[in-house]
Amino acid sequence: MHAKTAKRDALIIGVLMNLSFEFFPPKDLDFLRVAECFNDLSVLDPKFISITYGALGNSEEKSLGLIKEIKNLSSIEIAAHLTLVNKSKDQINNIASQLKDAGINQIVAIRGDSPDGNFKHHPEGFRATSEFVSYLKNLGFEVIVSAYPEPHPMSKGFEVDLQILKDKVDAGATKAITQFCFDDSRFEFLRNEVSRENIGIELIAGIMPIYNIENLCNMAVRCGAKIPQEIIKKFENKSPDDEEMAIEIISSQIRSLRSFGYESFHVYTLNKSNLVKKIIDSIQEKL
Image (cartoon, rainbow, N blue to C red):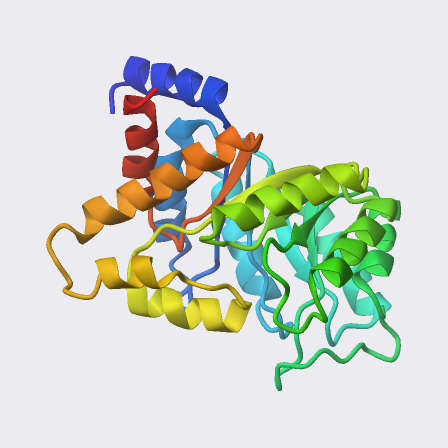
């Protein structure tokens, strides 16, 4: 893309909405490939990117490797994911120190799950994410947390999730990235409830492009998200038009969420850039 065109498009996007992107450290440790994906999307002027962290505590080195690779390319703010599950406070403090040394000032603080799918706190760790948030805040990090338009799969209900979000905000969280969701009414409901309860946090809508419907459905089961049958049916025949449908579904969702008052969108890239750029192009064309 020509430099002037890229700058113009970035300005358009900056007026349109606040974008951020999620990447993950690849199993093959090809950090350069992911960095190239980031480079492709950097023309969209993201406010920050997040880099995921292994929930079972086995990929901190991979995360740090990817952070350093992207730091070599750009000065963009990076938010590193960090989970509390199966970690003592000393272990968390050690990882946090490494992140600080790598120039990280933001952490996406997540509880995480144990290998059997259930949460068990470390005897010398944190029992609740709100305690974790407070600890990281006191270490000098800006803390981003999760929010759920649909109930968390292990939750007793939306009201419980909302109280947990409030506790995390009271502990010092400043932003919350939502789980992906394809029911726009749930996004609207979450925003309205956050406002009604005077929970002072920036809500960032988590957006999942549809790369492969089977993979998405499997992911949704693990995350507790529901994929509407009308969306699943659109991709049943594996048509050459699948990409166009995916672009329309997600660009339409972003336009809908903007009408509800969402201004910030965090795209789960799955380390791919082409479809994301086409979605944003589609939104620009319909301004």
